[in-house]
Image 1: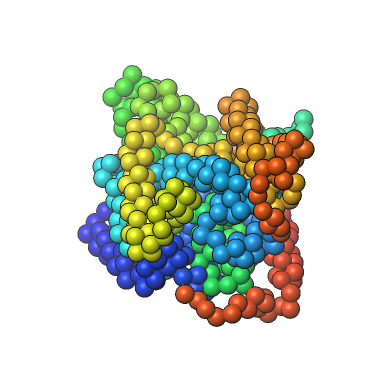
Image 2 (image 1 turned 45 degrees about the horizontal axis):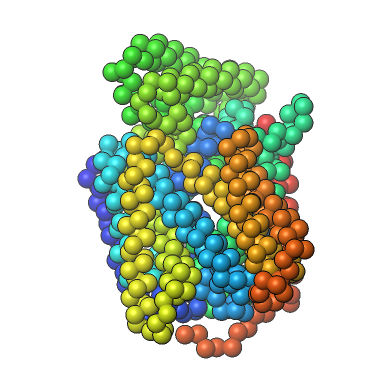
Length: 575
Length: 42
């Protein structure tokens, strides 16, 4: 990276920190610190919700996902708009009416204290660990591609945002997320524009889509069927995305305090609902466009040689191992493939310009054959990396986007795009720290602290909890460094817990006779079933959210005949 | 602290149900468009 890129990067990061630190004008009490005095308008809530969900890996991984697997990943979000509607009908009115700080307060009112503590504990453990991995995931990608020290990158990735998150609370988090998301989307748009701009003359946006389409990567809708029936191990298809995605989105937006805390900052129920519903309208097209960038990058790489593996670090490491000779053979085969592709694709722009459909289709068919050969060769390289003992991830999907940026984007834009990765990470991590601190303070600290409430003391303690969680997440990131790639672990970790948490809230809303004992035992059983199924089956992880919810609700319903609510306490808080 | 009385009526439409229908309809429209997109480029 040259000096101009460094200036752009550092100026952008410093600007965000300064802007965040200046947005601290909320009251010095818990409502001001954690909920920005419940006064934010719908558009700030919307951008805060989007900024919390869109982590660095979202921007890094999605284009690579489209490049390797096609655009079907967008189906993962099909359940989200439906979840927004259900939340606006069932969850949000209750949360607003009860003037809650955290979603888990509701569980004590509806069931009992142990259910509230169990759920907040599940949240703190899962969100704390996954935020640590959210610090580590972009750091490992950046450190590999830029040659930066991973431990230092973890500290910058997770540490600088602590400045404004501790001092400004939810208000600073929400306002910086607006700016962060705007810069991130601008950066992504510029990459998409440049990917088309750098194509040869005669090949534009439409032609790039023709190329990606012929290579089978514009497969937005897939049904998950194979000759012998539905494929339950298929991660992304219409049904897993709509049904599994619905349960995941309901759990994430309805029971995860990192999101609940965003829409509780709204000045009214109306503003919360508008933030959530507009998220339901814009999220799917936004993901479609981010994935589209990956398909444009694929079209670009038909005219330029690709590396044999987009993460160079394990390749360089393998050169001094016993796998070196095998790697050399694979690299020679790869070079031959690249030469064949260059020869084949050279006349393609003129075929597009002259309207020679037969000639064009013939070249595209040839490209498809070469791509199949390249994918086979790349899977051999991945296998070699896994077995060579270099300890790297066998997948380079998350490196494709940034490799393209570093190799082909102009000076200045590279620095901006690196800044985008930091800003996207900060947006989701800052919201997570704020929510971890709010649950620690409101659900745990207040429960066990017998002293009379004191606004100033609680405010200062909350700042310390935010700082503690920031340090905790960096510590997790440092600890998992060296344990191999855990980039996919965020999603998997979430699916272990989200279904159970949604099940607990589902019982609260819809099984009125169930009391604290029933739902508590059902939650423990549900957690055991989910982790057991994850360990013993190949079921795609999106379905684990459905399993957890169904097991908890069904078990609680059965147990409610043993322990009814009258016997176990709790208050009627209906939908 | 926000002390204004809450106005929870939806903007643009008389009922929240209309907003829910709009979100669902837009999702359906997108699925149809993505399906056509997939078929066109496959």
